[in-house]
Length: 328
Image (tube, rainbow, N blue to C red; front, side, top):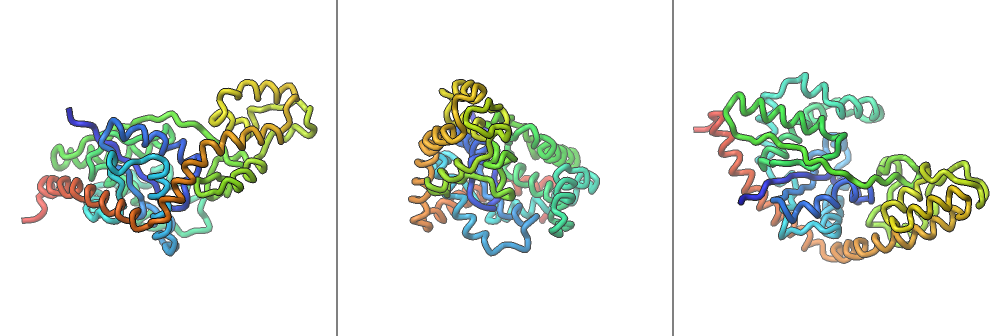
């Protein structure tokens, strides 16, 4: 029985942090055993907001493929490729932009949110407005059956589904409508209690050395109401407690009870977390370092995966051009 196709990707904007891992990569590693998976590095998407900052892209690509492999993605199980190497995706993006109503793009939640949030940057560009067409081409080029998403990403996927429906209505059935594969991710806050994000500088990445991880754990924001060691705490507002839930589940209830009773101090709680977190972090960190020692091998992985992706994309575009009556 033919396996279903899954597609997802990440922008090359810096090292993978723990939030990225538990929000996406951990699930991708599981999925590659049961589906035909296409996981890509979204360098064209990086241009939608970073078109004037491209000098770091080559290094970021290498760092990201090293993260992919170190976290457990296997090029023998999944197609790992670079978006900009698949020119068929650019062609499909162009064709989809011809049929996508402007009103669909303007109502996209991310478009409105980022325009208001990124006032210091000019992103009033055609590329940024039209990025949902690029996202749809990412998915539809490989005729993906499923896209792993969280609930907050459902509106974005629905727009890709609408574009696929419109294409099929105009030209005949070419694309499956991609279905969401809802994932329940472990949620980790940043070290300052906010969402873990590179823009907040509150991340723990797999590039961090063990000593850096220790220092970041010791700097984590805890319950602001606790001033003395024996003050009764409120662990539900503490970043350290949220990390214990993921990395120290066997002691999580006990630590919460001790915090509420004021019988464990924040420093002792952080030291417990350090060892548990490093036991998870260190193997991935070391594998990542080892992979980066031979960058030519990493480039070969990207080229080989891009060759496979290009074959699939070429097959799709034959059907697209035929359906649209393009060519002789």
